[in-house]
Amino acid sequence: MANIKQTVKLGVFTLAIMNVTTVVSLRGLPAEAVYGMSSAFYYLFAATIFLIPTSLVAAELAAMFQDKQGGVFRWVGEAYGKKWGFLAIWVQWIESTIWYPTVLTFGAVSIAFIGMNDVHDMSLANNKYYTLVVVLIIYWLATFISMKGMSWVGKVAKVGGMVGTIIPAGLLIILGIIYLATGGHSNMDFHSSFFPDFTNFDNVVLAASIFLFYAGMEMGGIHVKDVENPSRNYPKAVFIGALITVVIFVLGTFALGVIIPAKGINLTQSLLVGFDNYFRYIHASWLSPIIAIALAFGVLAGVLTWVAGPSKGIFAVGKAGYMPPFFQKTNKLGVQKNILYVQGIAVTVLSLLFVVMPSVQSFYQILSQLTVILYLIMYMLMFSGAIALRYKMKKLNRPFRIGKSDNGLMWIIGGLGFCGSLLAFVLSFIPPSQISTGSNTVWFSVLIIGAVIVVIAPFVIYASKKPTWVDPNSNFEPFHWEEKPAVQPATATVSGGATASKTANSTATTASSSATASSATASPSATNAPTATPTDTPPKE
Image: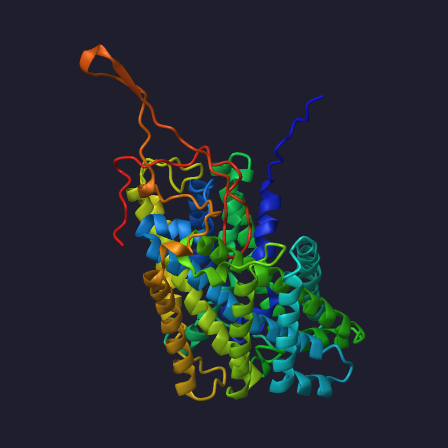
């Protein structure tokens, strides 16, 4: 009996929850809790001009190139050329590298609060040298585990996502409701204005980091073909997922604001302190170490997945000739070992900023801002590239399309995402007055010099690339302007009455699938790969 493989389609709610688990992280809640009621405005504002546009635009791009490798390298490269595509995937990889010390800082603080002595725990969490050691130990441990392959990491990540994020988020919200319902004193003024005081510029600066809360939704775009009737159901999943995400962020932030005074908010410690205060209120302080372990496990599981994940995208592009052979080396299991080592060295150097920054909190904030700046460069290229492709590849089949026939809705959605990203990009350079970041010279030096170096580096590498960099085993598909146009069979009469049949052969290329935060890759079959048409023009390099 022949085996019939049935494709299982994702339901709307299933995809919505997948998007939620991809995006939601509790470590950023304290940064918005200082805004009180107006924090809800920031969450809704960022969701409208960034979260939803990212989800929809990424879905269209992923569906367009579902049979081709490259992720954002492909998306931006098809619009602006390989050089700019390389910049997009480069900053996506680098920002994830910079992100590791910030998320591991939160993990180190969580581990510090496993003890039962509040004063000792808080003192340990504030110790820069303790945090530095824990960050480096955990990161390099995760790196060496990644070298052994990723076969079991997926299961750990799923469990970590539930235990370390979803369950604690629900618990935090429930605790806040119980606290208020039983007469607990609220440190948040629920009668304050929903709209921020825009005359105070400082109220906008720190909120720019909220865009990083929603980063990663482009990953959901790779599932657009797995949904029944994607043109109708995918947008539904996006809006449901966005609504759940916003609700978790808003209510979670309120729960922290209720139990901790705004002046006492600490970016790295307040989530643990908030849980501790709630547990003490319900006479269950013994739960504090348990939630600290759960949060730490969530961080570690996420980092273990991401250590090898984003590097796979730059690795695949590198094998196509965009990175020196050194970065293409793998171990016996096919893991990109040299890229992981270089990534680890970069994380180690960045972590040493603990020594020069005035506090763990200031280190956390400055690296978070640098991460936002670099990630937003990729998003601006993605949003503008999606609009450009409506004109450069207007005849390409789009299984999922924003708008039915014209480009008006794409201009609105893509333009909204681009303008929102540009606004957050500019604001991210300004030091927030609410947080002590030490010397402004150090702040601007790290952000400006760091961003400039990261942006210039891929252009230098691209200009230096050689034909010998191309791995002969690489099956990276050509860009649309490099493909030969399909020619219909035709019969041409030649001298002597002979005829010649002209046909065009198309070759299917196998593309490996890698669903990571940093790279959306293709499905195994490339038989539907788009071919160039007279209207598909190559971008100017």
